[in-house]
Length: 292
Image 1 (cartoon, rainbow, N blue to C red):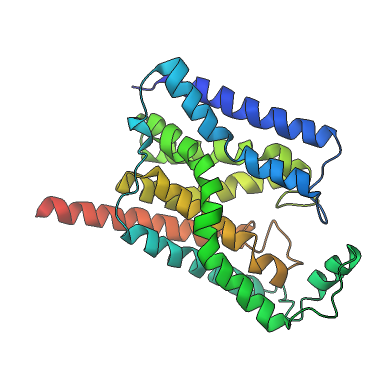
Image 2 (cartoon, helix red, strand yellow; image 1 turned 135 degrees about the horizontal axis):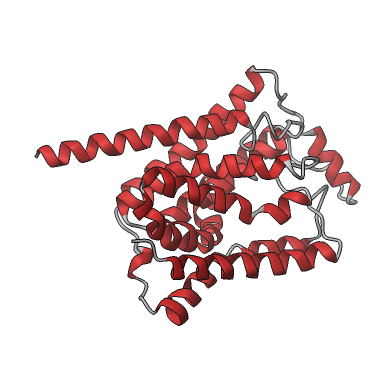
């Protein structure tokens, strides 16, 4: 039985809060191209908690059902460690394929990064070597992505995987996963229009974002439901963002976002394969458990 009241209330609150804040920023001239103003980036990071706020308001003031549905628990440690490895490996595969298929060249000397910093008045002559910068940024993304980024990721995931996904599961796994993926992608639409992830492609970018969130969503959905943990979902989300906006952006600065990298067809295909493999693995594990 679908809880239409809860779902509709949650979506109205989530999209209403998000679009209102982002709309005000955009009308004030905020754009996500070049080096966006720091204040705008901080506001955008804060808006990642809109789904969590909407969940709390829905559960406490509208449906009065309690937080049990959100799977607000840590669960077993193993899937955290596994996903902390799977996510970077997927990004390595994505950008290796991007390079091999001629859709992007690595900027080993970080010329684009140095030029961007120089344009802001930063002294680049005293910067460490490119190899050291890449190594430090990559290692930092491995540890800070799931943790620091995971805090903001959890702000989204308490809503997407904690509240919305369980509410949609009566539709069946396929429809529920597809619905969450599409909704999650459309939630980013205002930022896509002003240059987030798909600069220069305001409309096709929204389509690309929906495809990307649906693909990565399969993997996150599976682990969230299997381990009954929205905290795990936040951890995976943080690991993903840590890679997405870390070393790969500065190493591959000139990739067509619709084709290469994590936002393009190549990245979407990688995550689709990994997600479907996780679905299959879950079925095998469940069958084995039942047999015993």
